[in-house]
Length: 271
Length: 298
Image (cartoon, each protein chain N blue to C red):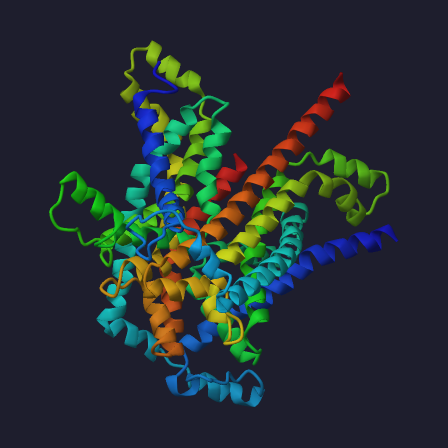
């Protein structure tokens, strides 16, 4: 049997991961380039990062993006978790088919259509476009992603614990808070992180739904990119990549520790 | 008392997301639908949708028109955009599969100690901004970019290749951006495959290659399908990649819609473009949903 580290497998992994990581690596390296030219190396420098700190438009945009991200991710996590409970625990209610459809549809909806339709709504009800409209839009699509992540966890859950709690007289709300939530919180946290990064990344929906008062970081990056590749953009991108990578790695490690501790507790219980 | 409270929890968990999605997903969609059959004159921004007075509803209904749709059908710009989008999405999906399958296969063959690490390596780029990942390619692909410098340094080419602002650049962008979507479902299927099947086949004299095509690939087919749809569906409506890498020569429908909306400010036609795009995507979406449902039940 040919298995494990065959030449074919090693080549596949090296080619695949080089393809995935080289472009990002190159982008990060050239953010430390002394020269304005982003394709010719002229020595190490951090001056582009220094220049960022004096770029007020960019800092404003970063601040808007961060506030939209935290707020929309938090509300989306709450709503998405509710939706996940509705999908997994209440299999029969009026309009369930429509409900399921509305949770799944935004996942595959082209961004341009999500953006366009939300803009038309905000215009129709004469809602001032800006920070709040972008936040509402982000909550709407990211809550569906949260719902899927939490739903997966809820489906794999051993329901006998919940049933036991309810048999002992706990209300469903009480059962959820003291039994279910402690078990599924890694999925809820992962959902929040996913919602946050989706909001942080979004260009298309934000471009449609925002007004002149609120420009997000991706919109700033996009308009700068259209004019050409510059080391300043590389520096902004490097900071964003760094923040997201650290957040995801920390979340993964915490999750792993949680699982290891759980496994150990289970072992102790049987010992 | 307990029963009342339980009703409350149920009402909140169903009702709140239901109302939210109804107000911010369903109603906006209906507005797009309505606007797509509105006359341009009554819908030029700032248009005022007439929901208010029921007495005007009937006359409003009579003003509905399919002009926007016939306009789209008669203009080669839109038809070309749809056809180009489908063609580019299809080719990109095949290319993503060709790179993604070997990667997923190699990952599934790795030892249990390596697997979580390799999985992490595939997932991490997925969390990184889409826009940034597309931007990273501009510096590599442009005429004076790193790829051309490298190839000229090797002496493989004399003059820089023109890659940016071509379809090739869009293919690269889509394959790169959506590779994790292809790898993950295939890996999930390959990973839970029973290795003993391959051993049995080998014992019976099957060559590794034959075993792969008769056992491994068919067993991973569901993952392949899921991956292909996960790449194809969003690729059709893609905006950022054709806009930044494809230049003005390649029109994909996401970009056409964007331009129709922001540059021409023709809202009814943009809405009709959106509705047709959704109709095109309904078939692959429904098939994909079926695959996912079957996946969930097994």
